[in-house]
Length: 138
Image 1 (tube, one colour):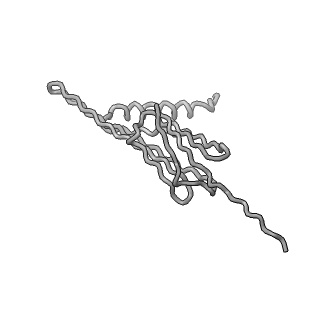
Image 2 (image 1 turned 90 degrees about the vertical axis):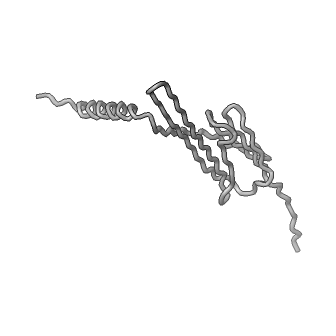
Image 3 (image 1 turned 180 degrees about the vertical axis):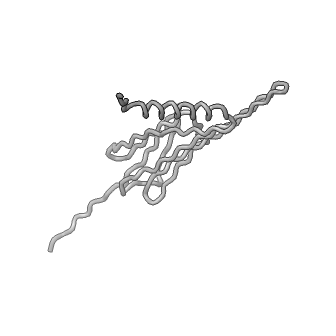
């Protein structure tokens, strides 16, 4: 008798596929999670953060600073209803993303600028100008 070590993996894959099929039969509530790829770039005099947020509108976005970190949140809710005779179809979709990005000290958070265009959020945070003061030695 020969034992196939991959047989249990195949059975698990089949059970998982059946589970996904069953879940697909109930479309009335679906939540989708998207990822938010982020680039943080030190450009010398400023930090630039570029985040990909396709499918969201500017009104869906929230940007704030908390405990020295930059927080980007996006949430989208869509509802769709279709009526044809006795047939009724209603669907809801929700999508949320959240990123908390640790930033270096010495940034001017009062002069932050943010732009959102074609699903790309770009945030520029200027660095505070550091004045050097020479200390005279006695």
